[in-house]
Length: 274
Image 1: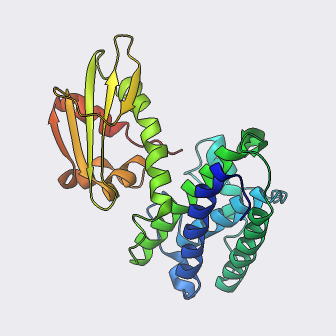
Image 2: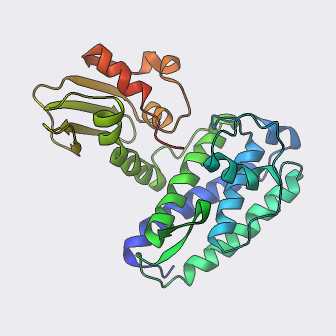
């Protein structure tokens, strides 16, 4: 690949996850495509359709001309409506059609990345007719395909790649959102510190510090007197932060020490994906 060096890790992580997705779904029988995934309201077929659709948009393909049914009650925002269109237009595709389109899309995207010579700050199209930098777009695709790979693995009972290159990008994106979650959304008090201690194949410890103005920052230094310490494993962390599971369902896998009310508020606001 010839992408800018600062984009290479995103390209590599994306390639690793999307090839894993292809290998997961290639042998599936028709009934497997209807299995529910942890991604709210989406089946295996829907997740694969979404991945195909988003990668097609990265290629510059026009969005399908399609009207969504009125009975899709999980569609509650313009963002959800935008994402659902690429899914719904493929809902009646056969397994062979899905696999073939996914394979062809991966081939085209790999070719695009091999020839990619734009700088990271080049502006490219984003969902909802917005613009984003190429770096943000590639980070988002690496994030998205890893999370959806895990959705598929969960639905198909094929665990794996929990610590693959994409997981590190997902970790960094989720951690970048944590100061807002804790300081603004959960309402942590000024001049306080909250420690997040994550174990497992992707292990890390971070401290969110809320200053006197109520603004949060994050660093890797421990705090001697945190108001809350939240400890869990990496799989539970990403599933909570990506809205794949409710806190009550994994209460036995999350340990909270300190201010119980603030800890509950943090968990309530923990999901950061749209």
